Structures are given as structure tokens and as C-alpha cells.
Length: 103
Image (cartoon, rainbow, N blue to C red):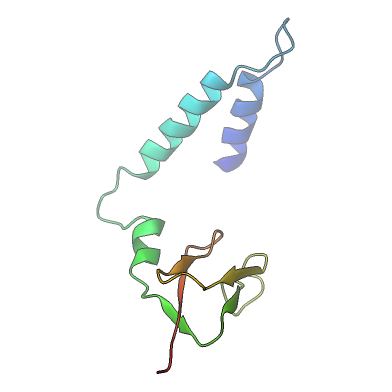
């Protein structure tokens, strides 16, 4: 499925005589693909699932997020600063972290 989408995207963005790509077709194909995926409302979207996970409390000011304890299922390591009062979000997986203050 994904490979056929990529192939069709490559065909639709072939360089024209002006040397520029037509990304309008790419945008419509991607939004059609997303709309098809979102038709089944009985399932939660990945963002809805990750938002159900409560913020992870961390004692230090910096947290290293790897996405998962299994390296094959994780993502590149991201160091996140927790100086702000609201939870910090990992840009790869969406996990939220907050500094746990002991007073």
C-alpha cells in the first residue's frame, strides 16, 4: 500500500518544462490517503491513544526519551528540558514529561 502511494506520488511530481514539481497533486493524494484511514471511527487515532497516557513524572531537569525500552520499537534519542511548568512533549512519539518537584 505504502509503496504504491510513493510510486504514484513520484509519477505525479515529475519535473515539468519549468523544472518545478507539481506538489498540488501530492497534497491531494496524501489527504485522500489520510481520509481513508480515518473512516473507521470505531478505532482511536494514534494521537488519541498517546493522549490517554498520563504525563511521566521525572525527578531531574532533563529527560532522555527513546520511545520504547525495545530499541527496535523506539526512535532516535531526544533530550527534553523540563524547566517549564507545563508538560514537555517528545517530538517523535508524543509522550509527555513533567518534572516531579519534592517539597
